Length: 215
Image 1 (cartoon, rainbow, N blue to C red):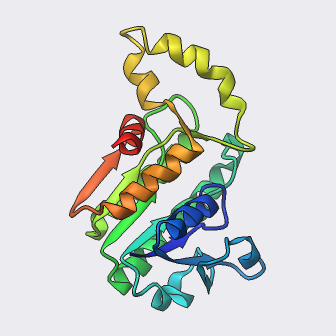
Image 2 (image 1 turned 180 degrees about the horizontal axis):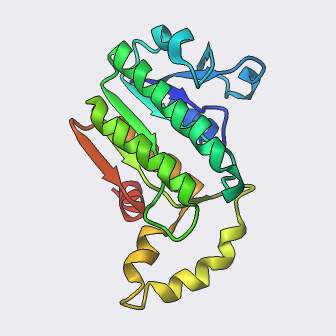
């Protein structure tokens, strides 16, 4: 398959590109000027601004799938304005590019919701989901809560709390929906979404991401 990735220089994107290439897919990745060296070797580089698809949408074809991974790194409540100016704007640009280039399947990483914190972040991602539904694109939406990996390990301290919450009837559903996903699991779920495209729309919550890895 030919896969176009936005956000390929990031935490998840670099590892996804390596795995897709290892599995024999052709990968084209968007990068802004000066960051192309962060992309793994073996993928084709498309230069452009993720917030404005006019400069690169013509280079998406002949991709079968577009995976959108652009977002503010290390989200926090202090970055509320950036969630709209970067996360949401880049999602719109990617949808426009996918539609214009005839991409058959759009993969969008959102976030688990509802949740008691990070309201602005969730609102921006939920709005992105709504616009994706309205676009008419066939799409897979993944909703992790937190992806554990290098530099993103502090939630490991919460694992005992999750263990308890999953065993209490009143908190079991929330604990599973807002559960933690390890980086290799996230990459494997994204690969599964790419290799198993869907007609219409599907949403993978945290339990579905775990199940996609085991399937």
